[in-house]
Amino acid sequence: MVRRTNSLVSIARLSSLSERLGQLFAHELSAHSSTANPRDSPRLADL
Image (cartoon, rainbow, N blue to C red; front, side, top):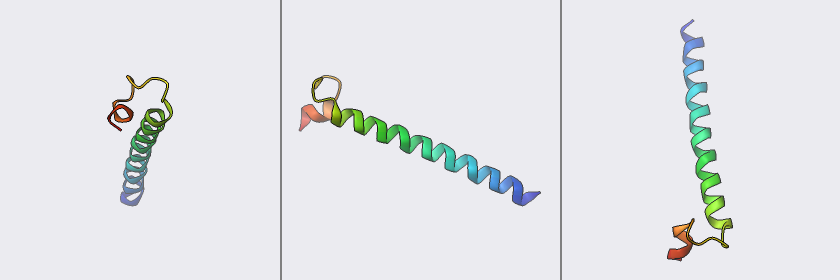
């Protein structure tokens, strides 16, 4: 029983971590790909 709960907790942590990484990757991708709108991506404007 303890193992099952531990695995569930680890799975939940992995899913949340992967979700954060996915959001970060999508944000970076959109920031790098949106060269037409430099106002939406301040990083490209800084470069």
